[in-house]
Image 1 (cartoon, rainbow, N blue to C red):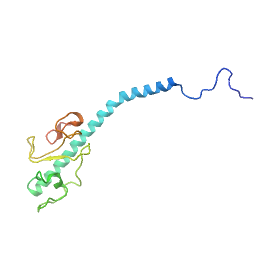
Image 2 (spheres, one colour; image 1 turned 45 degrees about the vertical axis):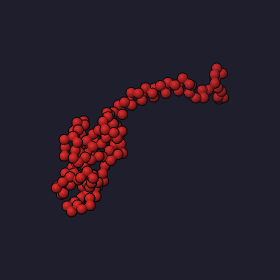
Image 3 (tube, one colour; image 1 turned 180 degrees about the vertical axis):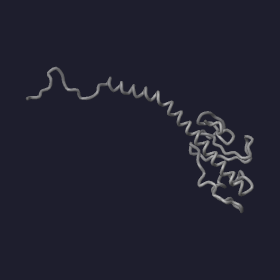
Length: 149
């Protein structure tokens, strides 16, 4: 049996421009619907991580205080939880294996005395590293992490 091409047309070699445009539009619509939900989940995960980190550092600070009868000074900072400050006879650490970084790859800040009515505070200034802001630029610390849902 002799196989011949049909006489009425030629074989299709690929996709037409219209078919490609339809695929691109469908992908764009899917991205527009899924994108905002995905970014909302990322921001929520960042907030949960901040809450957990701040609570872990606060716990380590409490253990430091039990051993040394005081919190680390402002000049000693959170580094006193990992390595013994000079002249510290009662240091019984390390209280943390390593200091965590916030979700934006910045170290957490420490205030002794605190500025929001607490004795000491652990906080992050958000992605912009400036006081104030909203969303990923918001400040989160010991005074408001309980508000994170």
